[in-house]
Each structure stands twice: as C-alpha cells, then as structure tokens.
Length: 266
Image (tube, rainbow, N blue to C red):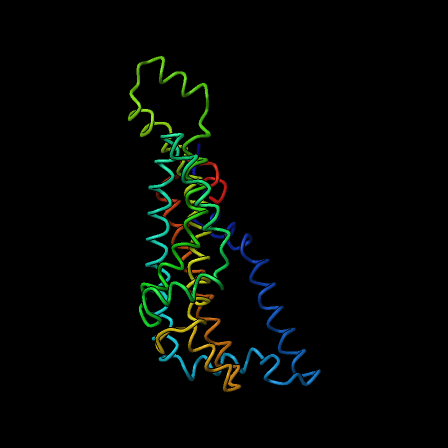
C-alpha cells in the first residue's frame, strides 16, 4: 500500500480542523459584535478584545499562577491514575477484591468536590499543594479504575481460550492479551482524567489555597470586579487542560499505533 504524500496529508488535516477553526473565529466575532451592539456591561461579560488586553497585561502573573496550579493538577493526575490502575489490576485478578473495593470506589466518586475539598484542606492544610492533588486524585481515580477493569476483563473469549489451550500462564495471558486489550480503554480514561484534573485543581482552590494559585487569582479578581483579568485566567486554565489532552493523545498514538481509534485519525 502506497503511503500518502506529505502534501496530501497536510491538506487532509487542514480540511479536518478547518470547520472547528472557522467556528471558533465566528464565535469570537459574534461575541465581540454582541457586546458592542447591545452595550453589555463589563461585569456581565467582557469583550474578547478586552480579555485579550488583560491577558497581555497580566501575562507574567498568569504564567506564574498557571504553572502553580498545573503542578497540582499534574500531581493529582499521576496519583489518581496510578491508584486507579493498581486497584483495577487487583480487582480484575481477584473477584473478592472486586466485591470489596467497587462499593468504596463508587462511594468516593459520588462525593461532590464541594463537600470533599474543605475536609481535605483541613486534613493537610489549606496552603499545602498536596491537599489539592488529593482532591484531583479522587476525581480521576474512578474513571481510570473503571475503564482499566473493563479493558482487562472484556477480552475476546476465543483468544483467551486459545492461550489457555496452549498452556499459557496467567502472567502470559495478562501481558500478551489483557494488557494490550486494556490499553485503548486506559487511554480513554487518561483523556477524561487530563481534562478533569485541571478542573478539579482550579475548583479546589476556590475553597482556599496559596495566593500563587490560579483559582485564588480568579476569585480575587472577580471579587474586585476585574472580570477581564478573571476571564484571562480562565483562558489559561483552558489552555493547560487542552495541552494535557493533546499530550495524552500524542502518547496514545505512540503507544498503540495499531489500534483502530488511532489509525482512523491518520
């Protein structure tokens, strides 16, 4: 099979992303136009041009607080995903563990972050980044665990029977069948966790934290009616969340290039 030429690939990718780019520009244009036509007050909704000016004016400060919160989100992402994978492997291996751990996992996922954040802040200290990391870890733990368990258990019965017919050990079945089957499920969970981690980190900071945090910056600027600054900080959070997602997407393409979900984007 002849590989497509680089020029053809470039045109294909431009066509794929062009509608989203056009829609993004159109929304910004209509947003700016509506603010000017209807004379919307700045405290209700600043114009994109005003937000862009505030972003440029506070760039150094935004980069500082954005990096601080990014570290909290990344730490919570690593803790929660690691814990979710470990529990998933134990759950998939021993049915007793599944019956024991699953109710606790569901209960932890059912606790709203609004109720959980003040408790964790009290345990570890409001200014301790670890408290925010643990909040993020709780948020990403459940989707990571559930998706990994599904990938480890929902294997092709014919493939499983074939391996057992050839006297494959449980370790061989795990490494050569269950783990490869689980990787697409795990990367789906990583994508969800990548976006949830930044959301959890910012929201957890609304309940107190270091003055260097993005969530604190947003609440302080909004309280002082500097809403353009608050919106510029929200843009930073969005950029970080999108960057997390794209990093996971790149890792997926490198780790499982054989899977249909990856090949369909080529």
